Amino acid sequence: MDEIDTKSDEIIHLGDFWASLKTKELQSGNGEIVPLRSQSTGGLALLAATPGQLVAKETLIEIVWADTFVTDDSLVQCIGDIRKALGDTDRKIVETVPKKGYRLNAPNGGVARRGSLAVVLGWLAVAIVFVVVA
Image 1 (tube, rainbow, N blue to C red):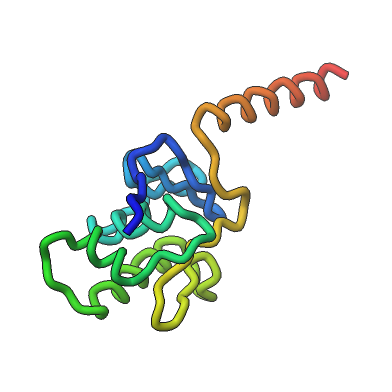
Image 2: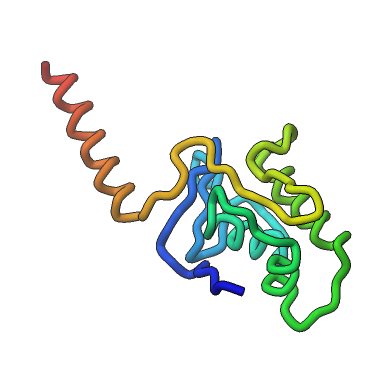
């Protein structure tokens, strides 16, 4: 199994939400922390570390519930919690790949580094000022 880094500074843009790999938090567009159980935040961080790529059910269970025996039902509940928090009623953000695992689809821009986001926001602010002055 390949090591998946969930400690990086990357943030993932998911519709109206941001998921931080470093803090394992989900934030709404207005910056509020969206409450999730610890297993759900761990599962989201693991999926967010590899957006667009399949993460096997076994990998999710092994990493999120390390040293604990759980059934597929626990994983299904975890994924359900993530979908509910994201408002993913059509299951497009967290895609199920039957009998294999799950894939996180980042619909609005995908992965960004905090430094990159700051640069983009800085340039956006400059552009707004330029338009207002003009």
